[in-house]
Length: 236
Image (cartoon, rainbow, N blue to C red):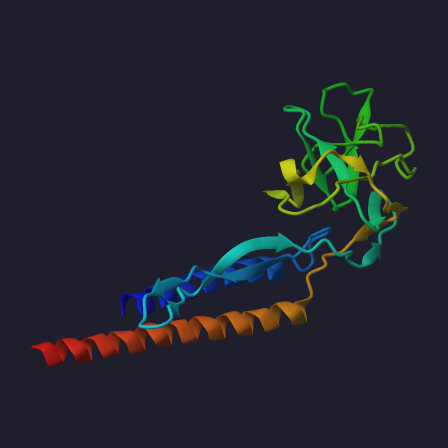
């Protein structure tokens, strides 16, 4: 009996996490360069009970196996004036924290002039957080006097993008399984930015699925509670 409670409680908890992921996707529906995430479920281990002839298997429900990122291209949005870049195809922009030198990767290409070393004679191409945007040689891009000129923004990629670490503000860090950084095959588009690839219709559909699964799990808990109460009443 406790196994049924456990399976239902796990299901409710996991569907709540799934709703959190979908809610984040919807909240970023208009965020430049945002890549939506999706949960993938897997069955939990089975427990075997010895029967007269064959083992009888009982499941323990399901759990979120992983939360993966959908790196499909978002729509390109024309944006004239300033330093706006998008990538058509695979790859990422690389940005470097001027204090820690940590390099992270992003698809958000809304850049601007930046002065991060207090040298008023030198301005670098930076992202919204003040990180240096890097060229193909992984060096900060020193800007000239023309604020409308296109600069040599680099495009980078990895042999696979599974489980890249999200560190906020649409930036990602590679993990060991992603391998060494490679030259990206995507093409830089100047005068445009990439919109979010989260589709509102798809996200609402996932909300309905998660809400129904959550309701069924709670109903299962309620039913098992009623059964246990009945059994306890018969014992008294």
